[in-house]
Length: 122
Image (cartoon, rainbow, N blue to C red; front, side, top):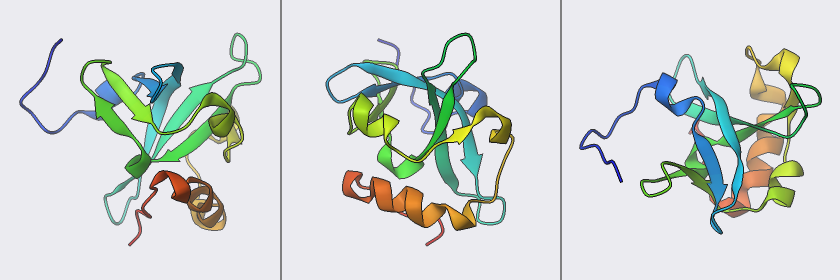
């Protein structure tokens, strides 16, 4: 087990990090993170899973406040199972470069509120 005494992590070390559920099952990986340009808050971890050879892969914006880092797993943990993630709001790869979430954030945070999602804009 490797631990760091530093509380901050560069984004390039978050990208590619594995994501697990509380049972320890690997659900996918963090493809990227979305940061609010004005407020500076990390809004979402963009979770990728599914698809085959890059085809059919969907990206799920998971509110950052839902994830917790598990030192032993060396990855992030979400309090949900694969079916719950698959049912969550998602978007296609062509939209990965950025988007305005104003029309979708109520839906995204509404979905994740039972899992402890706290809006980044407040």
